[in-house]
Image (cartoon, rainbow, N blue to C red):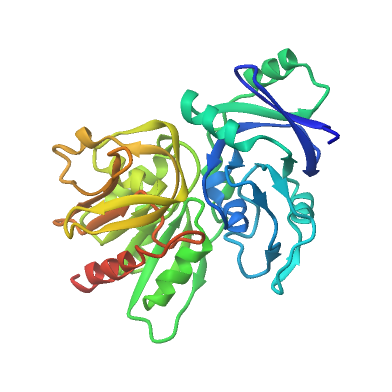
Length: 359
């Protein structure tokens, strides 16, 4: 195999491979995902903005990409690292191959990498930054470039909607205003399925403008980066508390916690995959969930905020859900809309409509 590209991690470790897609050099955070399928939804998930995604499962691209399965209008992941990539997909719905899509979207890819070894290194040592570059770049030069490249703080701004837009459904029961921090399209589809008309607004829309839209409920979406990097949303949620039911997913969950006085922290290597068991403390039911996040809510910080723990991760005990009955707030760290992943948790959208029905 003719290795023409490589990944250099900030600790100097090098992984050689064959480039596909865009051939541009790129510095970004390197994370791993354990999903066996769903690479199209992963690549188009805005929560991966600024990240190179390592797929632990070896074969990618075998069913191509379809026009209906994108989770955003633009690419989400910044780079894609795989063991093996198929250039000849077999799927009647496919409109392009994985390499063709990456080239068109300007996303660097590298195949032939021992992705399971790389995933284990990230798991053991923690998330690191890295650079995808030409195979001839010296490791010392790559480390220097990584160190001199600032960590982006405006990723939500980059992937949020620029203006308000709407998604309507037949015979609606409720009107939901969705704060777009990098929202996946399937979230909007799920809200429509549960008879909600949706008005999507940019992340920096203030409380007054949101209330002027007369929502029955406010939804706060997933998105990339550190929740503390978007104080505008935190301030808005502080002002909305108690005025309207609210439901947050992933980054939205973290932002709701911060707006109520709780705190967040960065996980060693995050949760990314479609097989994470989560326990609903109210029912005792265990759901298999789809996850994609680097940060989590600190459980001890919930004390005195009016929030209570509602869901817990059975792998590491981290907070997976919170609620406040008095102010009609609910949020989860995982993705009940799936896409990709199991659909055990879609009922949470029904619980949100129940909250709005009590208003």
